[in-house]
Length: 198
Image (cartoon, rainbow, N blue to C red):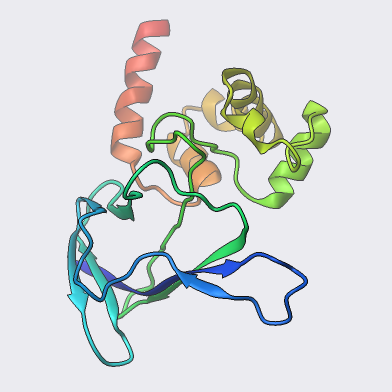
């Protein structure tokens, strides 16, 4: 089974909350074709030109973590001075699909320096329990201490021990990710860890 989604537009809403109508700036131009900065993992990408659904069509089969992302031409993305990122996604398929967007911290490569705590409500709750203002100091979460403490907080706050204690890796995965993407690999790693630690 192949699925696809069309990314119609990627723009960032400008900063300056005092502005009556926020400015917008295109993050990626598709006028010259698919940029060389597009990185593809387990997907094919086609440029759709013209019509109401102009954008990038991302197609993928049943696979772990299909994704496409744009790396900056040089250095890291600079989002200072902007209030948000807007991405329009059109689903041409008859089945509902889950589409996620992630903006990593400086130095993140998808593995390291990634802040895994998401959602303002989690930031607020975690801030209160850890007694660290994560709204004003979000970079604390990408330090080894902050990453470990926030992960332990998330585990405890979501009562994940009940899944671990009963070897319910499906339930735990759904509680953490909302679905079962990557379940096969996670199960293999879980079995390896159990064999190692007994």
